[in-house]
Image (cartoon, rainbow, N blue to C red; front, top):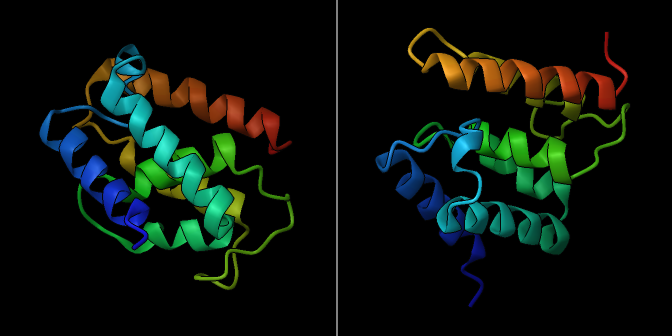
Length: 129
């Protein structure tokens, strides 16, 4: 039985409970952070990017933010590819929007800075002004 999707959601929950944020790059080398990235990449390869992006519909444990980050870093969406679950926005725009909503004043300043740098990198990578 395929449990990678469940493991991905449980991984997000575990990181959440351990106060590890998606853009907390100072913790990027931790085994549990690396494992979540590995699971995300595995899901993209096994199920496809559009199916992986169904995790954007979750609302707990920063699952949408992890999903958006992994999708843009490792999923290589086409610039014109429309997100199936939305039907209107491109994958890139939707994922950037999800990640931006996460960057609130409640998030530690270092993580906000990391997000801003990541956001700039993604906009450059995907040619968004």
